[in-house]
Image (cartoon, rainbow, N blue to C red; front, side, top):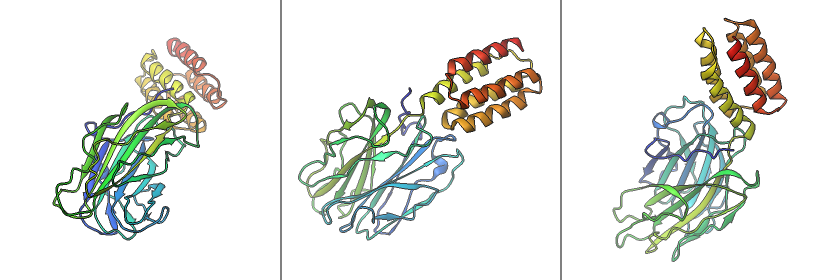
Length: 329
């Protein structure tokens, strides 16, 4: 099993935008600037400032084809509100999109993540939000309900908001969590305004049934409010990972005079890691037709292997069959 890939700012798989007003329409970064491929998991995150609200009733009308999986605020008047939504990328998303925030009284900070190697059908899960004013928020242990003990990607999400116009504001600070990497954060410009916000994310790859992240030690706790939670992303299915690797290898090894066969197999090697067995079967059958430009026998074997894979037999058999026929043809 392989961990989902950690997204980074350098790879343009982490994007931020901040909105320094109390508008109920919050606009996320331009998807055109986000690096993504078909099947990648996209996550939209928002920390907003408001003085009243309840979980499940803060955010609504997510655009861009995103579906909400977390909408939380626990204590009116002293906490941040957080929203999270997901979609599986087509690889061609463009433009900005919005979400509606109910009753904002301050700013909002938004983040987009693009994650390769995530499960093709399991929705990411968020733990319960934790809050703090005089101390940094510590969300405690989180055990996703949808799976257990896999090579998961854990995402620490933190927010900080300014509640007083007196003094400087350092938001979440630059402190990193133990065992977490690739900290990235962004905030509205500090101009001593009540309602300023920051969002921060960091990541950990860990095979565990539960994760208990710590609190951020560098939170500004002077005239601020802060909140934190953790999100778990399940890895791609074992079968599709193994098959993808085998097909990608065979795609570069097939000894065909027609390069279309090798190119098609290499394409499927990436494609299948994000698809179900039925979709894989269909793709292989298509490849069989394409390969038929040079060999009907090879096309037949590919169609047969498509049926084998849909029956969930081991990928080593698939690799052996394809390698054998690749050499013969």
